[in-house]
Length: 314
Image 1 (cartoon, rainbow, N blue to C red):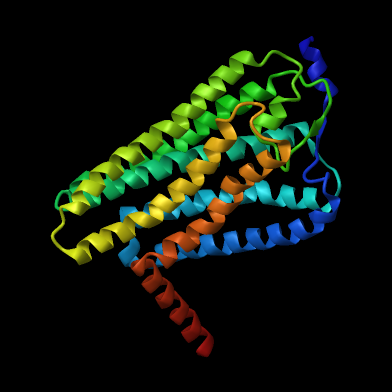
Image 2: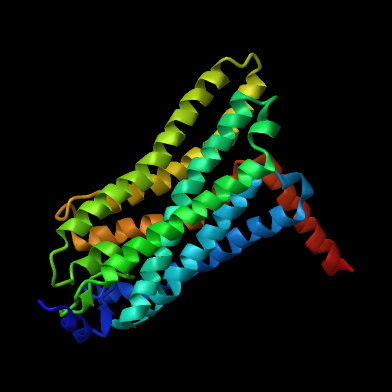
């Protein structure tokens, strides 16, 4: 098929859950609530860490970056998804589809590397507490954050540019809620074997490399915690790591099932649900995970709430 046929598709149709029209109205309400709670929860974390001087340390500054990524990821997907759920079929322009794909890959890739950097931060704090200010100084912190964002940008740029260069000659129906790479790739009328090799290899590197860093960090952390003489110290260390481990399990587990599965591994509806798990549930639950299980965040949150009450009182 010649490349000029690419222009034959100028827009895509997002099918969403059109096979279950009776559920779309209910799902719209549920996802709208999820979106609003996600925005409010992550915004509160961003603001609290900005205002509270005691939280201006790498552990919480990483969490602040994670909240920025989660808000951005939700904003890139949810508005379009709500439109899809409010109608039987929704069109999205060719360029709009790939812009959405770009930001999905950017924020998803950035989150992978941020979670790895957060694990390294916990390793340095627990295994080398006396040297922690040197190991995790401002320069190292900034380099880790910048590396995470730049890696996300590079992944998104290469993959989106490559996919958008394929010819799309029809059909133009994407059996999904948003423009994710696997369902869009099915609509190309070209040989995508080389890209699929790259995508699979790249996904393994993006997911596995940070995951291995996380795994090695927590193996060292576990041994360090078991050597602690104080029960209180062990409990505090476990509590600090539990929040991060919960986020890692949720994000990496669902993302791996989505991007490292065989083509015929799951039904289209199951693939949609798996995509929703890491694009919606992770941004929704991260604020709860990190505030409810962290005493300093809870204390800062209560302080923030008292300030608001005092302002309204006067």
